[in-house]
Length: 358
Image (cartoon, rainbow, N blue to C red; front, side, top):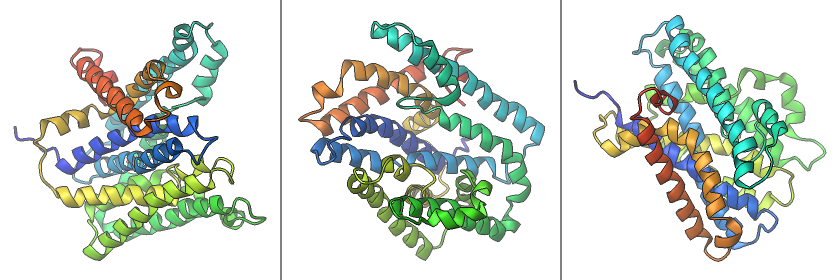
């Protein structure tokens, strides 16, 4: 049977998982040097980190492009039983795994007693570095609404969907970004606009709708150019705002790089659109891209454990000082390569495969 995998979706998923692993590798260096933001180590790590910030938005847009596709018929019961239940079970399994890893196994490696309070807190709050399971929690919430969205998200409702996206972009993404930049002022943008509470009808759902919209109605040339310029400005803004505001505005890095700010959204949208435009509707035939694409969930779920281990073997304080770019790239290659190899092996084992391929 001829493959019907679209190249653009495999490329998006592949680039997105490359970026997500880089986010966590470079974030470690950023946080390690955040007391010395003028150092070359912080600057270089911040650039790597900023350039990778389209990864998570693209993953969520891809979910919208695939799950809201009108040509793929599904009923609500089947979707909840196969998709929602599967992601919920995966969340529970991996949540207990990482709670055990962080609270019991890692302390044992460090020759410290287990921390059962951390085990409890991890199940409830995901504290600490690289708390990547937040995405699975969010995805459960998105999946709950997918069958409802499918009733509304149709080609004939194109302009209603676009209107909702535009309202959401303003009410949540734009307002939050403006709020960050006026955080030191006596009056912030959100002081006024949050009174309307439009953000409660938004969340991360606009990404799902944008993914469907861009894949269903590819933008015309002028709009593409505008989005590419906006995306380029946005990624530069992410890097520069973190670099120059981190010492003045509390927690600015966490705000600027988060998914629900305007720069992160525009960067993700521009890159998603660019890949779709380059790949068109060609069919996937590159085995490496396909293999990385189908392994993306496993790489996402497992790479944090591998990163924890590699940071024990390659601590920043020992290797990073004079060769920060080389350190980040080497650490990245080890983490991604080992994780991909393990996921490839695990995906061959019956009964274990479903934990790594969703």
